[in-house]
Image 1 (tube, helix red, strand yellow):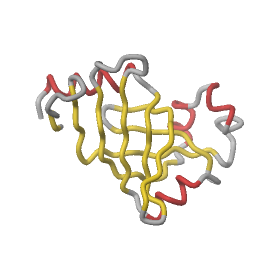
Image 2 (cartoon, one colour; image 1 turned 45 degrees about the horizontal axis):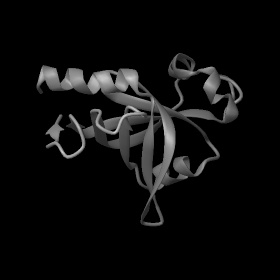
Image 3 (spheres, helix red, strand yellow; image 1 turned 180 degrees about the vertical axis):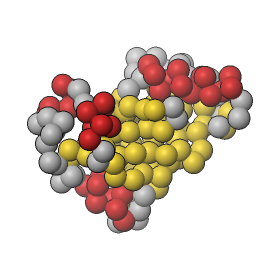
Length: 136
């Protein structure tokens, strides 16, 4: 693994928290905007147990994530093929809790709050649209 490539990817993960998460529902892709957190290259996103994405992942754990700077078309971005699992560790839920989640989840103690752990299988880094992907 190229350390420089890993640093480019981590820079995007550190600086750009909103992206899309695509799951599979009834053999069709279904995407939605999500807020992402990470530990190294493993991503996490908060959700409510009662959402479709939790059901989708239970049936098919393969997901696709897109992250980039929101206000610049020519900025670097990543596409991530990952496998999703449900994570309910209290320490991680507290670590990634923030007030922006209150629209969907009452608090870190909300019994419907869970995290999706997104373990990358492949990460494609693009310096800009149209550039050749570097694969991590």
